[in-house]
Image (cartoon, rainbow, N blue to C red; front, top):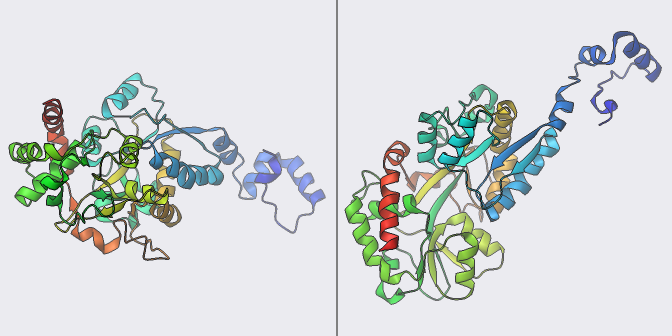
Length: 363
């Protein structure tokens, strides 16, 4: 990049005067005297940061409305991990133990933020370097210093128009829908906690035996477990299924893509959670990682995440220019009625749930 782009020259200096002063003092010293930082931008242009979002439409939208604007603003290049590569805690631990992690930021679920933080896998976020923290909902700040929530989503029922109204969670157990339902194969914590809330009235503690007894009752209605967004779309478009349990934003993006599908947030209530941004321990890019997190929490990016990813903002100052957006995602005061998990409890119990879940899938 040409050096002229970094020069902040007072208007009263002519070009000849500028060259004279700059030559006498040295360009770097002159720029500092003028209030410019001669190295910050050039260093940023040369720096690259690696981030892991969830795959599929999530990653595509995140790239367009967060990565690319951040690069345009700072010059920092961002690489995204391959869609098939999921940076679970075991993978992050390998990176941390290597002493030279290649991943700077990962998207984490609440329970994994707690586990990873306690295991020393995440850097502590300095809120002084992330001033947008002050504008966040309390739930989005609850897992500091290890992560900050940058979007909120809810769990509900996607369904084919004309096949039912699915206004209640219990509708998916109706025998008339035998063989027409799909659940996510890897969505253990969501399914377990949703069913527990329905049968006990609480998110925790989880009555594991009662939950899996209800899953046994649901099994005749399940055609197949979907393994990805693409897998689900294929099944739905082929009319193998009529209903599925999934996240509000994924269903809304399907609608944006022209798929004839509706979304129900059932009358009993809906499980909701935040996605957190965490910085890998020993990341060499902690400074720009914190800058990126702050950028993600600014109103413009929060609005775009809401409009195009259809997940709710965690910045409570954000408003939308059309009420239709809050009609399909958690927004503002609507979050008071959602079911949020106890991340500490989940971190201590999810391994046992997953083991039981895998046994149930194999049974």
